[in-house]
Image 1 (cartoon, one colour):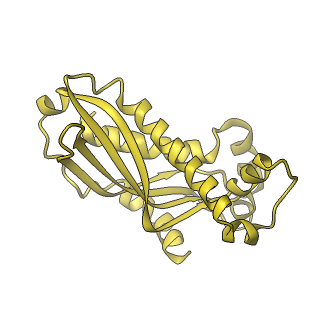
Image 2: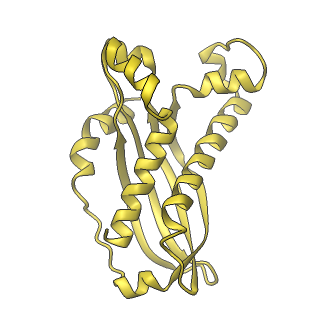
Length: 195
């Protein structure tokens, strides 16, 4: 949990600093066509989706579940990771598919290392943000050769703070999981496409 909190604290600083350079030329990138996005999790990945327990409970058609039970239940953890993976995949496809329309098929391979959305209670009492850290490898879809790698891409999505900020957040903003996955995909897209 300490690493997740540290990532949230450092994410604003890290988000502004791109430490990995894109070694591909604009002409190379223009030749790519997105053939797919694969999403997996590092063996030691930390996933904390504040609304995931509620979503899992709804999928089981029960009012609420004990958070400790969800944390220790392989089925619940698989549900949460599968949902996070689907959201990351969708965000990456949305950001890249319309931009990568060349002839050479490529695939984005994302490995989630940290995924955090702060709960409403946390944001009301002490504050918090939503963050994601992941590795992204762009690979040739035919050969599997890595064309360019972005290790430890760190993104941060804003979250309403305090009682009023949390109410405004809930009323007018997308769901936290959508915000953090879109921020990650947008940051990668800007880095890859240089725009």
